[in-house]
Every structure is written in C-alpha cells, then in structure tokens.
Image (cartoon, rainbow, N blue to C red; front, side, top):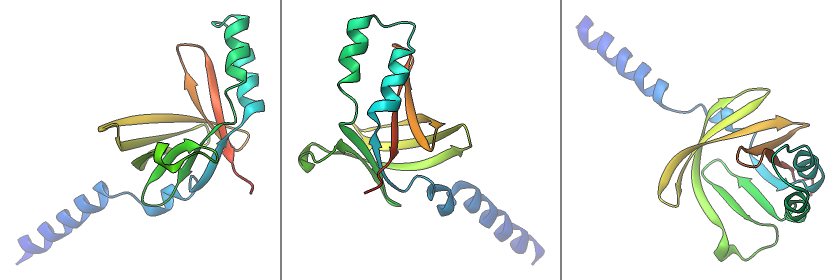
Length: 141
C-alpha cells in the first residue's frame, strides 16, 4: 500500500517538474514593438560594423513586433499583413532581471532557445555577428 502512495507522489512531482508555471509567462505577455531609439544606440556602439552598415540598420528598427499570449507568440510587422506573420509556441526557461531565455517551437519546424537581454523595461535580441541588440519595448497603445 505504501509503495503506491510514494509512487503516485513521485509521478506528481515529476509532472510538476516538467510543466511550466503559468505565472512565469506573465512578465512577457503582450505586444513588444521594436524600439528605434534604443536599438539605434546599440548599433552606434558596435565595434564591428562600419558607418554605412550602421546607418542602414538604424532605418530598419521600429518595424517589427512580438506578440506573446499564454498559448502562442507571433513575430510580425507592425500593421503588416497577417499572412506574413510567424507563429510559434513558447515557454520560459529562465526569467531574471538581466535576461529572459525562452524556448520557441513550431517556427520554421524547429525548436530553439532565444535569449533576450533586459534594458530599461525592454527586451533585446543580441546579434553577435554585428555586435548590437534590437530592443523591443511594451506597446503602450
């Protein structure tokens, strides 16, 4: 009789360990729009890019957004055509004051980890190849 009790407790603990705490997603829920000013500052600090590359990149910010809901997430153009949206599943692997690591799945049929760095209540994706981050800030609208 005791074996079954311990086995059921162990199974419950394993299940809890494998499931994500829904409250972990709360900090990311909503719309995060590319912030041109914060991202441009990061580009200008790059030690790798030349002046022309920096000027080109600065014009590309403010165009895309992430929309996180409890069940899925979307990467899309602000006011873009929904048929061009990229949808994916997501779960939080780490949520700290300095960075957030999520696992995305279903986008382009692969699962991968994405690391966002936190800065001024925004989240940024760092591009190691060109030494800059594009920051996304909560949409206030």
